[in-house]
Length: 485
Image (cartoon, rainbow, N blue to C red; front, side, top):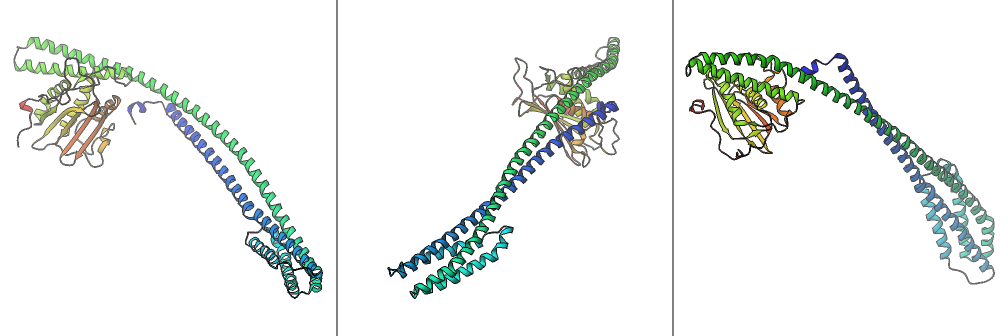
């Protein structure tokens, strides 16, 4: 948890947690309403498709095939009756193929009907239908044999006493089956109509609920964002107040120390060792003032970079190296500055000084105790109108698993004995990202770390050529170059 979050009142944290839970529940309710609406609509569609399939695949074809059977039966009756009358009157016979065609039509239509699915009420009529088919076929066989032998009186008796009664009974059974199929067709059509109306009503209702929940969720989200914006504004005001207090508490002693060094500088002989020490101290105090001023400006801007801010990369790196070099020399650490090209970062000099100083001091702190310790600084224009600065050491590298977590607040390597609380790199990341930049780290165990920072580039002042593609600036001097192996 960050320092600002840690200072939030308990009631505020509970309110934020409750708002988050309420917002999550509202989104969940919208999702559930949408899922239920879709599921109900899909269920109704499946039921409608099933009912439609029963009508088109059973009821309607059954009625059609049974109507064909009845038509063929009537046609055969008329043809047979006409043929017998012609025979009794001694008139020429008609072709038998017409009666055969009617019989074949009845047979094919009946077989097609039998291949279809059946409704529950149809099966109770099948025994009577099968008896009717058998009786008709038996009468037709005897009638055709008599017609073939020109037994017209016997054929007339068979037609009237056997075939027509069997055909009437079979036709009655077929009518009953047609009525059953028609009843189920009407029932299924009514079911489709009911499902369609119900589906529309349910969809409208659930869509209305979804719209209402969406509006409520939007209102809740607006309230949460408004509350969050208000909280951010209050925190920005608190940050500005806190920065003002820090500036007063820090810049006051810095002014007093500077005044004391000014007095000491007037009292000591010019050009001597003491004068150089006093001058170095004054330069260090000035850089501390620059950092404090930059952070104060950053805080007063609501943690946003000021428009038009610009920092000279070369000058900042030179100042940081001058400040850190005495401490590095005492530990035998070489600071190597290479490939530093002219450029300007879109931030205040104090901000860039804070970033570079934290990176360099961190590298000096963790470079280790090897015989050839060094810290290398590089800077050049990067792609996308950015300025990239790298600080590399040849220490032991980051502990396994630490990675980018090294930029988190209060994170330090396990077992670290170096002074500090773990805020330097966190400050670098926070400030860099607030200015639209990014940070990265690459570590090789046993070989060292390389920290990189990319910040948006600012336009160079008028009269100065941009640094992209230019020559590197000599900052370190010969005494700071990496010694030859």
